[in-house]
Length: 208
Image 1 (tube, rainbow, N blue to C red):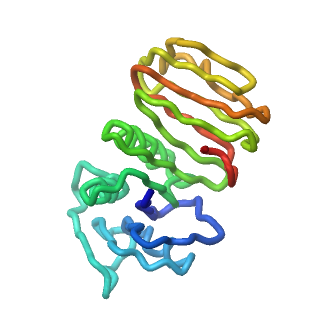
Image 2: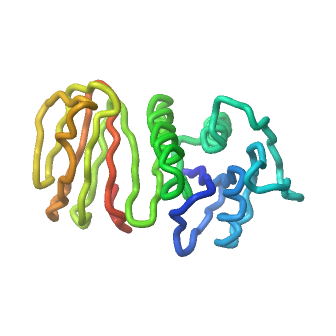
């Protein structure tokens, strides 16, 4: 599946990134400098450019006013969705201001709401969201995974992890799903009704 890569302004960059034919790279404002640290030239740079301080040349620019409802990262997501992309990987979206990190997690839920799948990469963890679906992990996955209800959800099942659930209801007011563990088995997390957010320690091999 072709991937839309989005670079934001905070932490969480990989050591290197291989862009394949058909992938789309969008830099959100100061994320342009983060992309440059990896030697990646974005296809599109967008935002209000209050953080970057200038408009790059030789690249497609989408400029927005400073006073707007959407964050620069969400604007980039909407561009990717408009171009037909369904898989998104966001770098530089964690570790800075907590409010922006929470906004980027909400943006993952926006992707799930629009039948797309996004991963927010941090330095030592990654975050994703699913709605009315399941996600599988290979038996080589190691570390912790925490599952949080973005809203009141039902039909939550967890199999192949240290702590399992079957057809449970979860509430955003009670963190029942915090700090589960991969135990060397093929595993699955699913939800029938609603959106789940889960946070995983960063691994090279996790999703099947």
